[in-house]
Length: 398
Image (cartoon, rainbow, N blue to C red; front, side, top):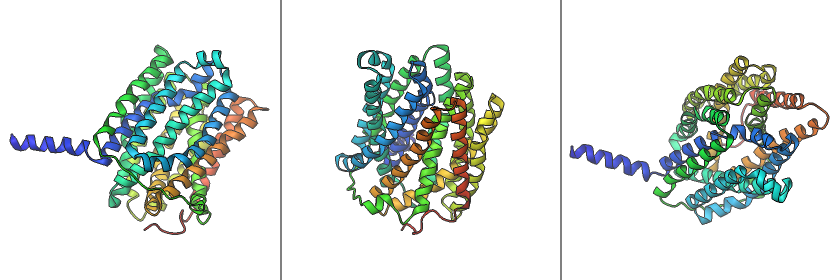
């Protein structure tokens, strides 16, 4: 009995005083919170009377502002404290969703441009503070020999917990209102910050160099991050909005994402284990080829059965690109975490801009469905080009 009590106390102490575990718990709860609504953000804004063009300009502003905020924020996080920076990021993210709840009222007071700028500012501050701190925290707390598995777990746990989140979000928006969903997001976000108070503060001196951030000696890696950004914008923004435009119901969209998320979680764990071996590039290239077809063919399926098939393939294959890539990136981050993280963020944001900006231009002369279709297919073609890569970084990390 005494031994059992000791073991329980030891386990609780480990869980709440272990940097990696604390990061895992907080990140998982945050991801669940955002998964309730992030899928429906452009739809919600559209239903508030904001035009498709205005929504895309808003997203474009987020991407452009994001990189410049990251440039300043990464140094701030290292000096001010990584854990405190993550907590502050939660306050900004909470503000983003509270502002979103009252966006129509704000527009009536300040007009649409100023209201969307205020919303974008809260969103960018929250995202930049969180992700810069997250990367620094992961590099500081991960075990080197288990980097791939711990990264796979860090990606898989939020996905596992969040399997039902899109369906819950879609159901609550359909059965009640989007306001109910947004209040749920705010509540869960508040809970997600709690694990951060149980671990010690971390500090890290960040050194940035122009050559390191631009990383012109590693053009293959830069190209991969651009394509990752294109994939992120396409599947996180364009594709859910496309389904709404072709009259797929919100609850069905949520249910489809919940169904395919389960495959994504399993694949995260498998690809994480494989990424701790010498087969990283084989895993990466195979994933790129299969995933590209699931993206290119999506617009041709405009019914729940076809969409489910494409998303299932896409959900299972995406981690085989992302986990090996991020494993290699974090290995290089041990050399100079500031340069490596900002290098990824620069080209990631560039990739997102390369999707949204052409879409805005196409919408000036084409129907929304056709314009979205073209951009989704182009992203799929770009992903397929990764299959031909022999390596990502010219020089190996120590």
